[in-house]
Amino acid sequence: MKIVILAGGSGTRLWPISRGSFPKQFLKLGNDLSLLQRTIKRFWGAFKIEDILILTNQECYHLVKSQASILDPAFENRILVEPSRKNTAPAIAYALKYLEENEKIETSEVILISPSDHIISPEKVFLEVLPEAEKAAQKGSLVTFGVRPDKPETGYGYIEIQQSADPHLCHVLQFVEKPTIEKAEEYLLSGNFLWNSGMFAFSIQTFWNELKLHAPAIFEHTLKSIAQMTIDFALMPEISIDYAVMEASKNLIAVPLNLKWSDIGSWDSVFDMMEKDENQNVKIGNIYDVDTKNSLIYGGKRLISTMGLEDVIIIETEDALFLGKKGDSQNVKKIVEELKRQGKKESLEHRTIHRPWGSYTVLEEGPRHKVKRIVVEPHQRLSLQWHHHRSEHWVVVKGCAKVTVGDKEQIVEENQSVYVPKKGIHRLENQTDTPIEIIEVQVGDYMGEDDIVRIEDVYGRK
Image (cartoon, rainbow, N blue to C red; front, side, top):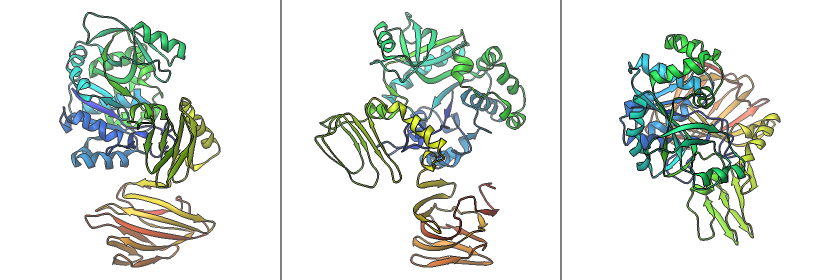
């Protein structure tokens, strides 16, 4: 069995912590590891690194690379970038074609598809059912993993099953969309419905057969070479694997899971999964609460104090504050949609922006200036570049930087500074084993990120 981890995402459900440039799989949520890292480790304990492929998009690639490499540098070579965003059905087809052609995986091989942003506990229970799922997939079935519900949940899709003498495998009757609370209560009482976990297992050949039957527009592209498929990827329909294959197939087997699971699809689901204090509060950050009950309070650097609150959600970041009633957090995406419509940058990015070489944080900005804190990771470097509209002043506050300005190269140490004139060609490099930190002051009539003319870039950016 091979594992394909889906690590794309739009970052709308857990706004303002999660954003377009920083989807939820990269969040740590009170843990030392992000959701992506926890997913990788879940499988890494039972499979070899070369059996795991992480599928992502270009926008998320460097974040995936950074977080996966922290676990083991070898994971850097286990990342596949889809040519463009086309939802999960084309993406999975692309990954399977890559495995078949580039890694010479036989079409009889079983592939497990897993999202990168779910929580599963205990993980041992999930791993123990994989051999049964693999056997069913080897016999030609599409296998879906369903979680036995412990409450009426309106935020999940459901799978209706036909009870079987085999407790590990059930025939799937139908997929059901997110229900009303009344329907969810009926499903819970019947015992014949599972939450749709979004995890699947099937052989490559079975997937090709099902695509040919139910999604021929995608299947036609899989007959091409992986190189041609990459070129033509944008021509494929944008559709999820659920709609393209799973809901249409008559060849489905469900594996019921008796464990704690969440797709972390809302702040309410974060609250449900987290450890609570004696007042049933979930508190992350610098929190001081008085007479506050049954609430989620998630803070950053600032102290958050509350008094006399109950059933509320408070999420604070450097540039945004979300206050809501617990039970309504599924509607956060409506806020994000409206922010996008208004062109608000808070819908897409944080003040801290991640780049292939590290990150920068906007500390202050005005009509003719911007101040950033720049962190360059070990042995990384920014592009050789220049700007039309601004000059820059760099002060090294931590570490030792190699700086190029014009035709001059120099080593700049802590408490030393460099001036970069407007239209001056420049580059910042870290040749050491520890991160360096720079305070950058930009001055000019325009400080947008699009005022960068790259001459040379090791990351292939234009």
